[in-house]
Image (cartoon, rainbow, N blue to C red; front, side):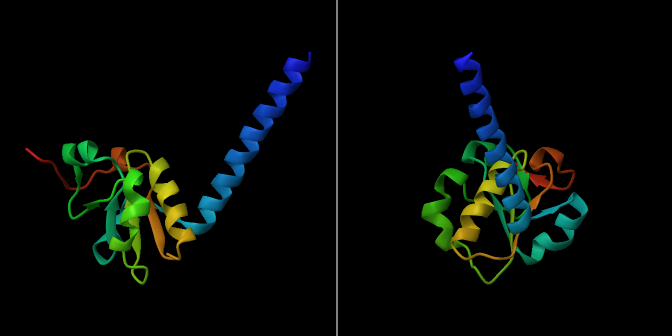
Length: 127
């Protein structure tokens, strides 16, 4: 019986953490539909936070690849005074990247709802 209580407490903690993280992300990063994303990404810094092999397989035309795994080291490549449009495969990593950037003072952060797998626009792939 003690094991069941322990598991329920752990599960409750995980659920609470997930909800708090989700609410925090909603406050700091705008989730844009594909149409909204298309309207603004040419005036922003368009960043693909997927790994290089994913980026090479196909990415939004004009995007720069700064993988989430390198974001801390490479965030100086981004200007904090310009909007940052982020995307990944499914919008999970881009949300985490937005949290990291927000903590470092970046304010105008947006990411693509559903990520690259929902993108219907032009893409570029290495041949």
